[in-house]
Length: 272
Image (cartoon, rainbow, N blue to C red; front, side, top):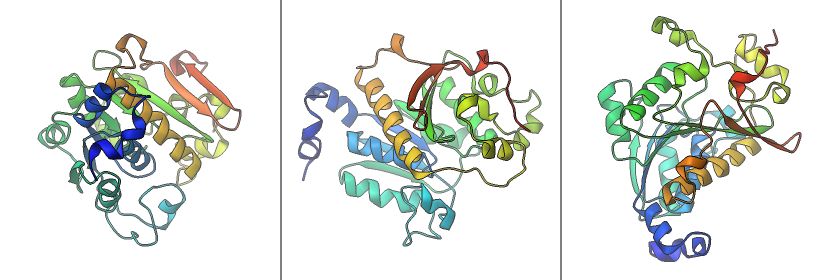
């Protein structure tokens, strides 16, 4: 079994040269839970030759509705540790770097993303401080960051350019960094208001303790983000054609709509 045999069916959609670009590329995936796990799997199946994955979380029963590595056999196991064998089973030649602890310092983040063609931000919705540090360091090194939340019955794609709007600006983070630990990203920055169920507003306003989600949307965003990453790495997606924040993509499976829009231009909308 070798790389060319595994990815032979990619050819025709990708040229041999483009497939080699994927083979020689590294992508750093921060978080392999509900969205990052499917995104990492998509990248592995597309033929990305090196992945760095990171997640300090442990699988438990509520993860099983949507997280790729959450199985009855992996409950109680670290998410990165449990996801790693799946990725290696897809491509035994994959170079895989595994981090089971959070990257809380500049040095740790820099080590995690070193040499990456792209960075995937799949950090938990409520964790703005580590999310901001990841973005800050990737931006410093001229790297694009892709993020794919799964609000409601759909999936989002957000691309942060190293020369564009910062994650703090886009999500409206408090200027006082001391407030970041309690800051929750506004739901309307990750999906159109008419696509957001009331239960997500309830989470934003801390009326419920969990964020409702579903496995179909998690699978959808794996393909959406994985393909966009592959198109960027191979050069099929030209830089001038990227949809970067403040614009974003939302696929709504309930309404059967594909939308490109700017959340910052919408009339403020927040349900109590």
